[in-house]
Amino acid sequence: MANNQNYGTGRRKSAIARVWLKPGEGNIVINGREFKQYLGRPILEIVVKSPLVHMGLEAKYDVWCTTKGGGISGQAGAIKLGIARALLAVDEEFKKELRSGGFLTRDSRVKERKKYGRKKARRGFQFVKR
Image (cartoon, rainbow, N blue to C red; front, side, top):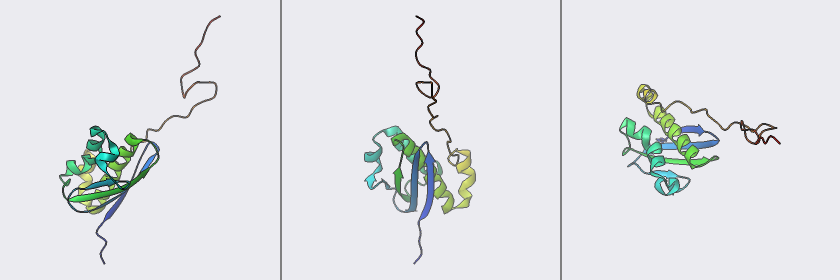
């Protein structure tokens, strides 16, 4: 039995997405729910579909993924990277176009830790001269 699905892992902030691509008609399922229902905001739907739209494959593959950690926006970015990496597993010829579109670059920005003696990571406590 041939396994005709491809896998990619994506990360963004503290979110992690495991993505499987298989030939189909363009359905996207995130954590067992339809992606429009899960994400809620149209801009995040565009972010998730962007690698497939860029390659012109949005109606050729079904996407099934599980995400955990972070918020909805971070999870959408993680899914985007996971889809791009799974497309790379489908065909190595996609690498140049995915790289030029910026889909294979992992966004390494994460929240900076809070330091002692400060209210947040960089913001100090309010100063009152009395």
